[in-house]
Structure formats: structure tokens, C-alpha cells
Image 1 (tube, rainbow, N blue to C red):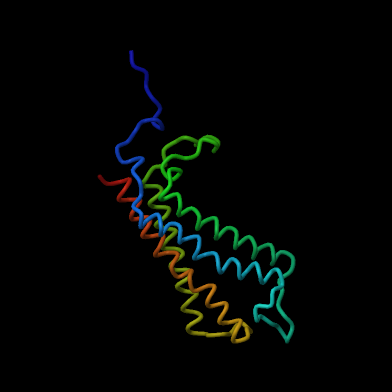
Image 2: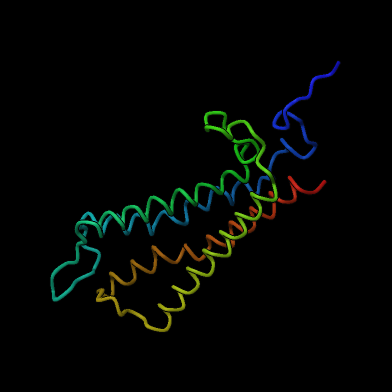
Length: 178
């Protein structure tokens, strides 16, 4: 008599195939394009003079504002690191150490949908922010050098969405199609 095997251990023909090299490179770029803006925000909280001033005094966030800014940087980087799951084994099978779901297969349509929504969202968010900078220019009380640094640190975020979408397409081709 045969015993049923759990669905998480059933081998599917599209699982375990390696991601294309170009997709692996792009997935590693995603966290790197978010890093400069996060470092800029953390430097602002740390009191590094970035050209931001209010009434002639350098701006330095305090209290909950500092916690929010650092948290935003950490969450952004963590979300960017999730792109690696689209090219790594943990993007196919959830790690065993996770309670309840550990060891189960990641449903490819769920991963593709989540990554696509994320790619569209960050494209819209940072596209809108870039449009605002183009329309309004330096209305943040930054020195010209401080504004140039801000733009240099935030401009790479415009690549986040397109890079994530390209890696998502590779994941979909690898896991959902023969």
C-alpha cells in the first residue's frame, strides 16, 4: 500500500532550475540601488552635515522622527533584499526554520504577483518623487551641494522597479513555464 507524500516534498519539473546569470546580477543590484538613499537618511539622523538647514542651523531629526527615518531605511533595504528570493532556493521553498509554513513550496503565482505589485509600486512612488523634484527643484532648504548629494543618493531608486520587474519576469519564465 502506498502512502501519500506531503505536497511540499513532491518534486515539480520547474522547481530547482537555476536562474539565468543576468537575472542573478540584476537581483543583486536591487539592494544596491536602495542603499545610497538609506545611508543618506541614516547620516541625516546621525547629524552628518548634508546641506540641510532650517533658519541657518543644521537639521537633525529627534525622537520618533529619527526612529521613523531609520526604520524606513531598514524596511526599504529588507524589501529590496527580497528580490534575491527570486533567484535563490529560498524563493522556491520556504526555509524550514519558519513556523507553520517552513519547508513548503512557494506558489509561483503568489511570488510573481507580489513581486509585480512591488515593482509597480516602487516605480510609481519614486517616479512621482522624481517628477516632484523636476517640477519644484530644491524647495527643501538644502544648499546646492546638499541638493546634488540628495539627488545622487535618491536617483538610483528609479531603477528599483524596473530591475525588480525584470527579475520577476525571469522567475516567472523559470518557474511557471516549461
